Image 1 (tube, rainbow, N blue to C red):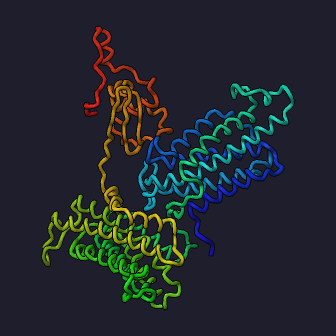
Image 2 (cartoon, helix red, strand yellow):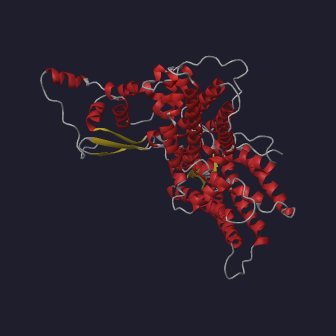
Image 3 (spheres, rainbow, N blue to C red):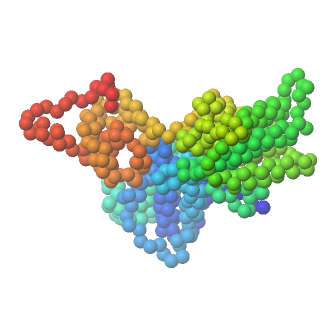
Length: 542
């Protein structure tokens, strides 16, 4: 059975293909190499823009996207390549491999930036996306380095007095092919700097283990069911879903049972009587703790009723997967701990999805509590808070269980994701996933000012530093005016449509200060000879 396709595998293939192409020049038309280099840089820019989509201009991927777009925007129109040479260059192969990796990630994000799958949260992780940017910058640097070599060859072999021999003052004086190489070669230094900034191309991250959104039938049965279950739990947490409480109860029971089965699978390796607990003993104890953390959720949900009707697929998948693991355990555990390590990886996702689902049900009064045999009432604040805290405890315990299992010898499924979750368990902020997932309020930007400069700190666009005078003029425009001005470069700055007025003003002042015109009130003031209002001070609450 073939190995599952992952983002890391495809991205590594692209890097290896490009590295071989850069290190070994085969006899082929130079036009094929030039076309392949352009194709790779174009895909790299598009992929970098996706990686920076949730961070704005402060992310290294945004810088890389800006660089590639600037180079591609000034490329001369390309003639159709000679017949038979379109795919003759390995640079085309590298571009195709990176494009497949891009499509695999793009499945997780909708056209309006909404999450379409449980792995979309990794695209909101700055460290994860920065790590992925290192590979894309490496591909760009390899393409730029090859462009420099081809440019040097052209200058060396060109006859005296030809444009290729003339020192370049303006790229417009060069022939189209030479100009293309000259523009791409200009990416070499900034791309290499970004590689260093992102930690290099070989730094692993949680995105490396990301697989297609919909599991393939070629996957092992357990892997396929776990991925289907994780996706089903995520779908129930979406705003347009109408989940039944029976599905939430089944998922909580499943998580508690999986933790208990993991404890049973660890028993042959552990010895609780030791004076010093071994890693197996610690993992076994954490499995017991994790099962206990999920049980309060099931106890509360047992006495609730929801008007929702969706979730039967999740119930069936939970039951089937639980029975599959039980059969594996009863058969003498021929695969060792691997199946239970794999199952434990989805428990944090079930905690996050369950917490979001419960909060939506409570917010819409769709979850009621059975006070007596025939009497139902709203879930009071005490029980609601206890249920929310139970999900938080379940997330912390489940993440810690993954960390303990990662420390054991043997095969670890999805090792990069497991390591990432283990690192989260070591930090006290592991509950931040639930807080971010359930908080629907748009974060407001903050501002710090100097006499001549202002810095706007926005979640989606990062730190925006612009002259205070330009920001003051931009703030006098309406929100609709600012959106209209920024519409001309919306493809470069990735507007979400939810930006507050202050962020829009800062983006306009930073990118299009020449488009800011005096507001009508300012025009009237100038007409009668009055002075415009003074610029805001640091104490002004913008």
